[in-house]
Image (tube, rainbow, N blue to C red; front, side, top):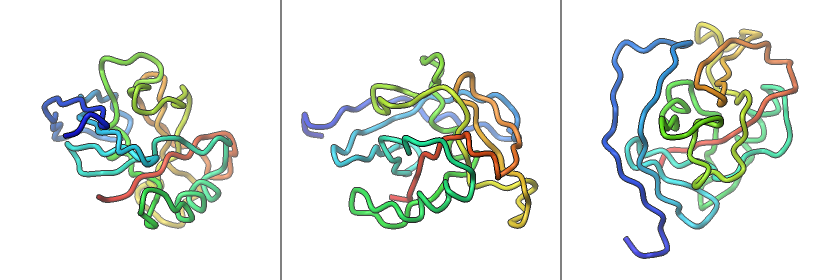
Length: 153
């Protein structure tokens, strides 16, 4: 890899039997692609480096990600709970993701694309709390949470 990439490599941590609401930490291997995106080499997911600067409701978060055109990808989406939990870095404290790769990361709640009990018509979705790494259900109408988008590599 050229010097233009920031690279951290750690072993992937697989956690079978982890359920929503569990506090999970995992080390990540990240590569700054220098185009507004960060590649997680342990999962193959590409993350939006910045986040939506506005706090939004769930439908607005979905729309924001679906309309994002960044780093040569046009198929951005909200991550699942399991996907966003892969960004947890046990070396970081509040927020628990690496601010070297995600410099505008903030503590607080981030929307996921996972609805309550995986029911698409549900009025609730899971949010990830980046202060300390847990999840909770929140009503999709709450316009107070963050959208961070992901796509497959």
